Image (cartoon, rainbow, N blue to C red; front, side, top):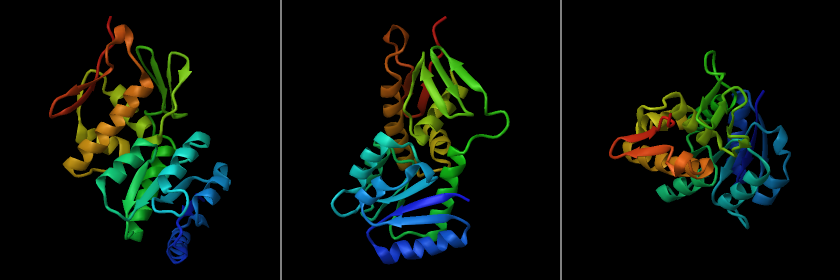
Length: 230
């Protein structure tokens, strides 16, 4: 049974979502402010649903602090409907986002999609990948530059894995969006979200051999992970 932590100051809302999730077979805890979230037993949580609009500490601030102590998957809830909120959430480590008012069945589908992405891979997708000085293990969902382990969110790991498995091929943004988030987005949303993720992954990988950029932009199409120099 997967355990989910709901973080929202609307007690009626959390009670409603808790009941629905429990009917779908999830174990659910709920807290109503950011400080309580950070005090929770995150090591026993499989996923956190985190509202942006919280008292005292905003959801963004909670996520920043949470990412310093845990890699638990996080789905953010945003009532403002602003694209910038979604981009900021992804930038600081969210795995997905759902707009309010929440459709309960969509939330369940998003939770299950994130859990699938963070619970391993099927046969044929569990071996190590080595491209130049980058090594990735799909089984443990870890990646390294030489011997330095990278601190990647779930979506960042998914994007990097897909690019490494398609090294030397131009990968469209829509394909990268589906690989990173487990679903197709609108063209505009896919472009913005993927660009944000690629920027973060580039920074975490650091400069490549001869200071050449590993992930190259292909204008109006997508990105290509460059083949290492011979």
